[in-house]
Amino acid sequence: MSGSTHTTERGTGRAAEAAPPATDRFACYVYGIVPEDVEVSPGTVGVGEPAGQVTLVRHGEIAALVSPVDVDRPLGRASDLVAHERLLDGAAAEVPVLPFRFGAVLTSPEAVVEELLAPHHDQFAAALRQLEGKAQHVLKARYAERPVLLEILRENAEARRLRDRIRDLPEDATRTERIRLGELITQAIEAKREADTQAVLDRFASCTVAANVRDPSHERDAAHVAFLVEHAKADEFAEAVEELSDEWADRVEVRVLGPMAPYDFVVAEG
Image (cartoon, rainbow, N blue to C red; front, side):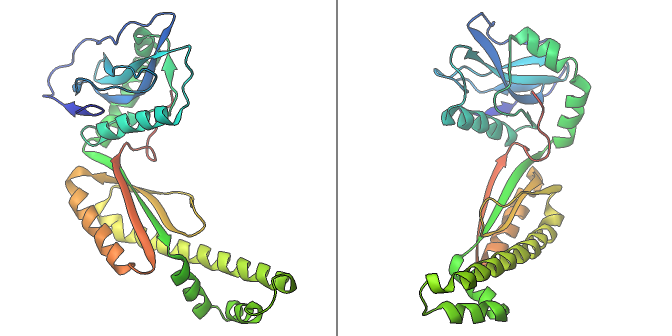
């Protein structure tokens, strides 16, 4: 399928497979590192305009996912970032992958071997072995606005008094009270977030390999956690998500993104 990679039989290593040769106009864009015995699906394309054909540059036990890019057309469009992530996430659903940050470019396939694969071969190979059979999933939980505010007012007497005091008064006349109420609500949400994030970590500990707590992306975030999950436990993880969603149904919206490349756990520096 276009945009994805798939494994083949894993036998003895092959010699380095060169991507289309670089010229003065084209360079070699690097997406990430995969095991040597991976094949790219025919028709897979990546970043650029027009999008470059994705191939592999192999060396020893590892290979780099690459495509040619026009050096006269700077990358940075939203579609380029989407293409970068789509390729890596498609790979991670099938094989271990070490993702590179967006924008990693080397001059040629030979440079990919000499400057990247050869110097870091053992390190990359060891990391890939650790990631075998695993992918990242990101859980995002966000408080529903009205339920969380009502919850805070029930639990915080000062917040209730301030809410009652300003309810029927002009905004200009209650500016200090409104500021204080906002502070109390923010503090209460932060405390709830800390507790609920810990509850998420505890709940998913048995069906995940590792976890990384992300910074909130929204003021009402209840939890934002990246998990490293074994493919064999993906169903167990999904069941735990469903159970959490049912328990928090009217209070918190729960979403999960993945499987994806393990950005939160290992990002190769290009």
